Image 1 (cartoon, rainbow, N blue to C red):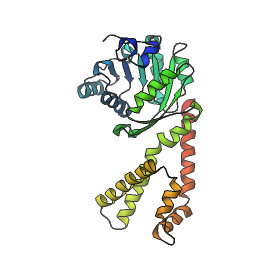
Image 2 (cartoon, rainbow, N blue to C red):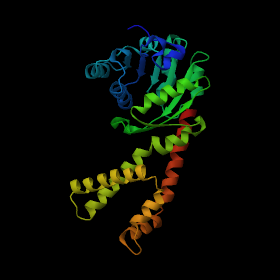
Image 3 (cartoon, rainbow, N blue to C red):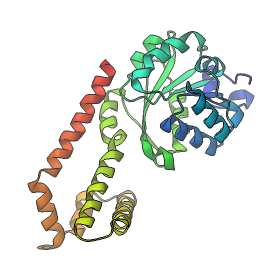
Image 4 (tube, rainbow, N blue to C red):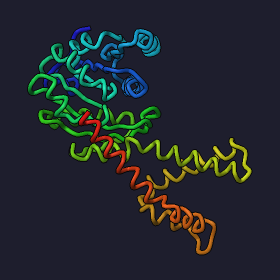
Length: 284
């Protein structure tokens, strides 16, 4: 596989008309979701590399998607764009390993939680362009919410390229990197909050005598419909909630009980705790 355009052309086909070579380092659940999304978006299979340390996993990815799965160092040496999708605790070791193979002009994109661009830049050659991304698990169904931030050396074209790339698997916003810990706490961890709530509501349905399958169907569709209303109506959630809340009715009784149990305060505390842990990961 010959290397594609570098430098400014690394954010697109450039004057050569050749798609950039994208090396995905780490093909776990999130990495695989990104890989499959890139393929669905039209990234040529011969311009996409999936570097994975575990031989069994590498063979599985190669068989499933038809992509080459070289060693991370070999992948980086060929790449115009490097996507870092490893766990935060594995990042420093990986950067040390790949730094000598990284070609000048290569764009580095990190989706690792809590790792600032300055940490990545410090381990790589001076001037390396780094973009930090926080995405979430709905990437598996092309409904991710991703936030992107430029490092010290990433230019506007490179940032726009990352936005376009992630736009194929969901929605994207651009934020200052100082806000990334808050993004991690809100949308990065956010799906777990909804799943936790759905789990509790299904248990509530079972408590009231509904079969689990019926309770599951009721709650999941209610969640999907409510999310669609939020997205399509543009209304503030307070107004949408008030439209369901009749005076002296069942909904206000339920909401009063949730307020009595401090559900709102617990959610605020939980989001703060996630933000604080994201900051701790940067220190680690």
